[in-house]
Length: 386
Length: 220
Image 1 (cartoon, rainbow over the protein chains, first blue to last red):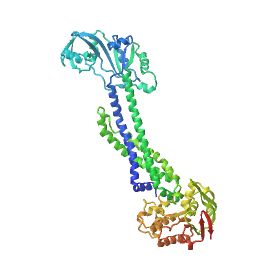
Image 2 (tube, chains in turn brown, orange):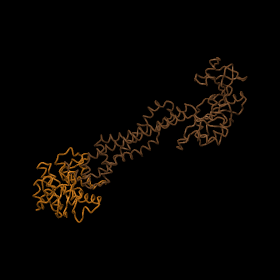
Image 3 (tube, helix red, strand yellow):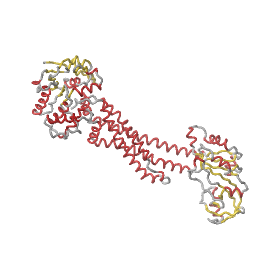
Image 4 (tube, rainbow over the protein chains, first blue to last red):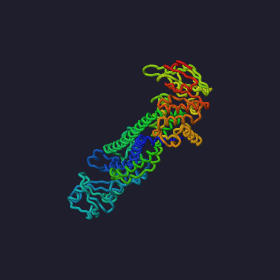
């Protein structure tokens, strides 16, 4: 009689024990698969939320006095517009979503306004697939801040003159409670023309994803690292990293990774112990069976194979069922949780392959100690018991 | 054929050492029927397990044929046991999830062997269990279970059968039947060592060894 046949018959005989073991493997695999399947959406969603907090890196002309910069809200000096393209052409840097702006406080229709020229977002060469996080304004059109639109009764589709140049209002912005309410946004080149500052900008905003910090694991100030990098390529600029946003971003990322790093190993350990206990119970139930098999000449290898083989079968079945259940859970519940990035939730068939490889090994490892205990049972003792 | 020289077996327990076998020496020749007698706890089962190569003596030598059992590796001993020794127990020790034919062929090892299956069928028929091949142990009477256990013990055509109180759970008729089968094996040249605390096998015995407290009290 083959060992596989023995394993099969024992599984059928002690269905409940086998089903409980199978349930442990299914639970571990299903949790792992559902986390991994929704993980992509989870990471995207987190990135999107973090991104919506705004850009955290500001590059301004080198000669800008910092006290003046913070009191005015922008630099009164300028630097070449070409910097943004030079910056974007670099490879291997973690900055993205580069936005070049030119801002100047002017009097218009009796109001103190901030005229803001904005260039459509420039993405680095290796990040061209990213969708822009800031709006852009077409040439010949403007966006009008809430307070200006309200006070001057400006409406969408109005044509307004700004220093003798006509512009169509394509959007009146909603109230922000910030200086944005007294801004008029136009295309950078239009505003450069109005202010007679062709080819000049006074700020590049960017998003620093802090990959740099994580990759190097240094304790250095990230702003200093960023300044070091940028000083070589943008000699007329200096860098301000908005630490608050950066730290929140980093903490959020660490919290997310920490959460997964806790949940998954914990699940695996609990399920492993669960399987181990069940196999131990099975070994105890089968003491006399093991004894008789030893008595009729079955060696340690065969006895070990009886238990580990059963564990491997539970692992294989558990991997397939766990993958199906985990994927179904992810597809069903994932889009409810991650509404913005729901499309990223798709079955990941590579996980099935991984599960089929890893789950039997996991089940066998969990069963190893009980199997060794079974091997060391003294048949002289077990066969004597009545 | 079976030779024990100064065999001692001590069980180490929390309450101290227990000497289950104390300086046991005897010799049983090929084809003899030996009966081990003695009350419960006298060391009969320990002695059978030691002869079977399943219980390492604390001291002494156990030889079967020309083989010093405990000088062999565990694997070689297991192989030797499978090929040369058959076991019959008081509690039958059949595997509950295997049917009769599977319980018997289990002794044939893990290789699929049609000859073993045919042989198992012959034994099952011979022991009056024809037509019960696919019954589970739970569906059999005690006497039938013991006949399955004897079939299993004889499948590999062993040279020795070790029987540990095989009639202890049987009514007199079934006990007589089992004794008859063991006697038949003995008459065909097999060696039997039969442990019991009764007197039912004494008329078949070439040797009677009385054990008490792990020592041989009498050997006739």
